[in-house]
Length: 82
Image (tube, rainbow, N blue to C red; front, top):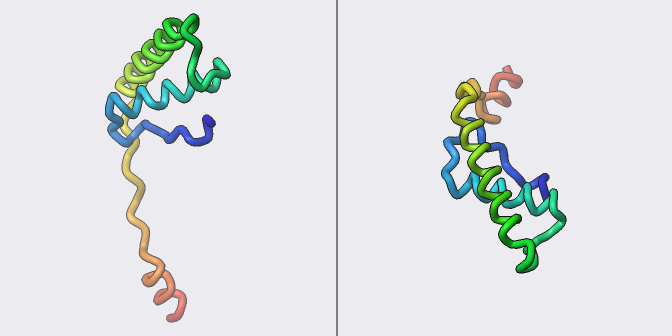
């Protein structure tokens, strides 16, 4: 499940993306896909807290510079053919 959480840093994530990642994390940690009514409040509270902390973390980290431009496969092939 957590393998499908994408890296949010450097992508300018929306609040929805941050919350979706927090939800996946809480699902993984708790073992619940959907909590019972008795656990719903604790589950939702955990999602909100993790989303909030994640947003603060992303705001505090420096931006990732974009990767350097890479030549296309055609350009690489043409250079090798020379």
